[in-house]
Image (cartoon, rainbow, N blue to C red; front, side, top):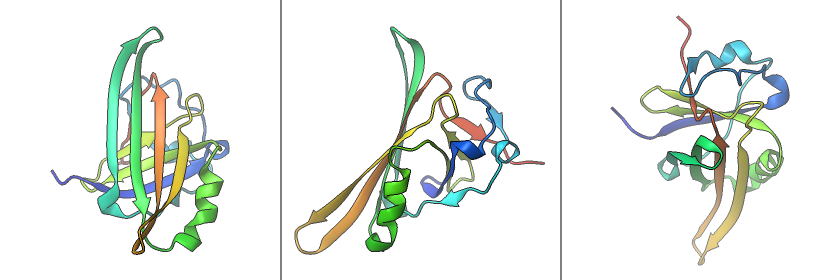
Length: 146
């Protein structure tokens, strides 16, 4: 199986119907819950890392998901987009090179989006960003329609 992230898409929670009732690890068709189009978040593919960890603590069983990536080109173009995603409620769809699609977040558990502007020496400049989710549902799978 090929590894890596092919695409990161997002949509504001105001354009998504509730699917919080689905059990952890469910597969469903995200498009059937959308009232708008997913937009694409540009990134440099080789910089994307995904981690999902399941824990059991005082609050019970929960998932901690993180996607970290960077944008190395077109920084002036993408600063307003990163500012828009920060502190607002969005659902993210992460498409892997293998074709699998992860749905990150729900109306009940929206993920957080953070970013930083990094300049290293005189030759490297990039935005790094992170999508974090802590939920009892974990990441859901977006199953293609038949």
